[in-house]
Length: 287
Image (cartoon, rainbow, N blue to C red; front, side):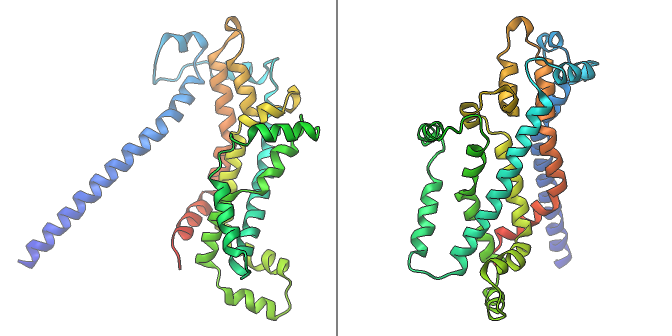
C-alpha cells in the first residue's frame, strides 16, 4: 500500500514538474521571440520588410550595418558613447547614494526616522511626467540645456532604489557588526564604505543594471533638454531615424540601429547575471 502511494506521489510530482517546465519554456519562447524577430528584421532590406512577415534571415545584415553606421543624419558611435556616459554615471550615483540613504535610515535611530522613510515612499508615487514641466523650466532658468548634468544629478534621489536597498540591508546587515566598527574607532563613512558596501555587492549589482537600463532607454527628458546633434542619445537618434523622409526611410536600418542599441545592455546583463540572481534571491528573503 505504501509503495503504491509513493509511486502515485512520484508520478504526480513528475507531472507537476513537466507542466511547470512546459509553461516556463513557453514563456521563455514568448519573451525571446521579439528579440529573435529583431535579429531577423535586421538582416532584411526595406523592400523585404514591406513584403511581409518571415522567420528566415536574409542577406542584408552587413548592408544594414554599414547604412546605419555611416548614416549622415546621425552619429551612432557618438550617440552610444553619450548614452553610455549618462547611463553609467546615473547608475553609479543612484546605487551609491541610495545605499547610503538606506544605511542612514536603517542604522540610526532618530526622531524623524519614520517620517523620512514615509516621505521618500510618497515621492516614489509621483510619476516623473507630472514634474517634467517644472523640471524643464528649472533647467532653462539655470541655462543647463544641452548639458548632461540635469540627466545625471537627479539620479542621486531614487526612492525605488532606496526602498530595495533598505529591504536588503534589513535582511543581511547585522547591527552588531556596525557597532563593533564604531567601538574600534571607525568613522561612519569608513564603516559604510569598507564594511557595509561589500556586504551589499549583490544588491548594488542588481540596482546598477536596472538603473543603467532605465537611463539608457530614457527618451522623454533627454529629448526636451538636448538639442545639439553631437549631444543626443541613442533613443533620440532612433526616433530621428523613424521620423525620416518617407522617400529615404529604411526600416532595415532602423532595426539594425535598435539591435546595436541593445547590445551594450545585453553585455552588462551577461557580465552581472550571477550577481543579479544572487541579489534578487537574497534581497527577497529576510534573515
